[in-house]
Length: 274
Ligand SMILES: Nc1ncnc2c1ncn2[C@@H]1O[C@H](COP(=O)(O)OP(=O)(O)OP(=O)(O)O)[C@@H](O)[C@H]1O
Ligand SMILES: [Mg+2]
Image 1 (cartoon, protein in one colour):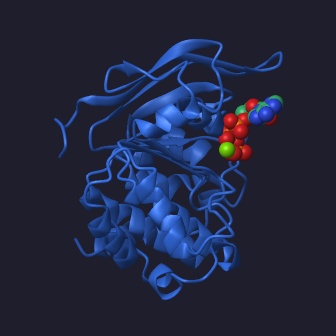
Image 2 (cartoon, rainbow, N blue to C red):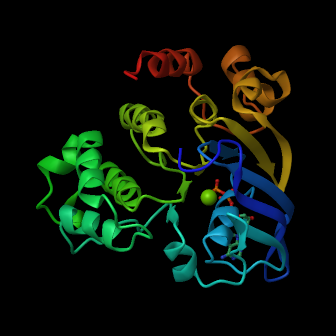
């Protein structure tokens, strides 16, 4: 641990965001503590990406505060927030397509707030994603969509972020790749990471995270320990698609959940090498 467990790294208070006249975030407050993974789950259009983009300085909030290790981030330009160690892996446009895999990774190290030990982190990144090592001289734009997502994640990690913001890392991946991605994310515990992850694969996100918030129409409607959310009947019914799985009908939350998925993902994560 770089700091004390439980100490807040990111503190968001009363964040309000508008797009024109439309309010996307009603005052939203959350904290991400040292060494933890906080998941934000919620239906399409809930405002999940808006939270990440606002923390990263890509959107200027109408109100509220964002602090990293006690220092104000709100009002700072995106490059300054990045320099302080907040690294966003967005939903799309994640890699430099005209650069090789290895040069993309070097960019991650170069842009890092802490360049110390980057060679070792590069090796750790390749160990995590052997496919990237095989393709290290290939142009990033010629990688498959899934491989580009892996590269974006590896590049972010090599930058040794103080706070990693992951926006739907599993979006558009084939089920097998989603599984592989969550296995990699579970292994990141060893990377001393503080992470805010937004995911529509709610069950897997809750298995991965320490704590979670459910966001709906720009408001946090549930929050708590991720493990207890998995067993909370209301969360399960409305946000995990359990109603559809158990009763063969659509759950109001609109999440995609496969039959048997939860048990399968639980088993997989338990089976992971430590
Ligand atoms: N640039 C924009 N201009 C206007 N409205 C926007 C803009 N970006 C987002 N919105 C609106 O703000 C709301 C929140 O969007 P946001 O992208 O944060 O949702 P999300 O929870 O990430 O959704 P998804 O799960 O589909 O990615 C939506 O109603 C969306 O239509
Ligand atoms: Mg989004």
